Image 1 (cartoon, rainbow, N blue to C red):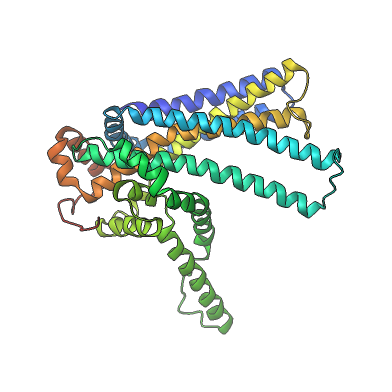
Image 2: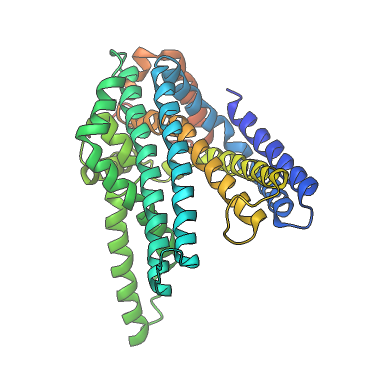
Length: 376
């Protein structure tokens, strides 16, 4: 129940360690500056979200209760964390090797600037895509397992893992590439959402308004299918990606929870903790580079590249492991929206705690909790 508070305090402490280590090893570089910035952001974020912590804690308590009854999920998370580590090391060598080959011309390789940019871009996309696939396999497996726990049924861990790595693997790959991009696109186009002014009837204004509406409508239609909640629905009901995303959004609309589910407190805190872990990992990579006396790579400034390599590996490893927490919280929210009565029957104590926390932070959110929604 205190895990959210502990995570916030931990992020502050690790940010402080990041800045302190940076001052000790390279006071004139960017390492201590980034650590101090992370510390200020962590402290500021804690004050902003403090009132919403009980709501997040209630969801997290229920989610971790389901994980605790299915400890095999932890093993799967560690397995994919190990794969992510191996994959990150492999890509680090690949990236550095290609850079040396292209710029040193050891093999007579002469490429144009555009070709080099294309190669780097493809490497980044490939790394990001594979990392997302690892993440979402864990997400789908956790969602299906939490669903079986919710209804007090035999654990669906291994059947769901089989579904995720075989039958639903295409949807996971498809979503891993596009969901993040679509969500980013939606954030960008929020500023274009038209706000009609009846007094403004100029032709140019009306034309701009028309194109704004078309762009926003198109992005909203994409976001209806390519949503992070789709992976939870895939794990629970084994839909394809587009159907899963649409049904998840339809469920929240019928419950009147479209604003509530945008409360990303748990994912944001985990992302913040992962960020400071990445910074601390980057600081240790800089220490390793200083002790060795040679740069970890031949690319750019030794301190900068050492920090970036350690930073990225730290973020990837922590986010894969933390995925078990965020995805279990997502599964709890979807199950609570679709089957609150079953939860009260099977887990009455946890259900009472969640209802109490939700009514405090989101009054009126449970007014329709016993109404059937009919979305499966």
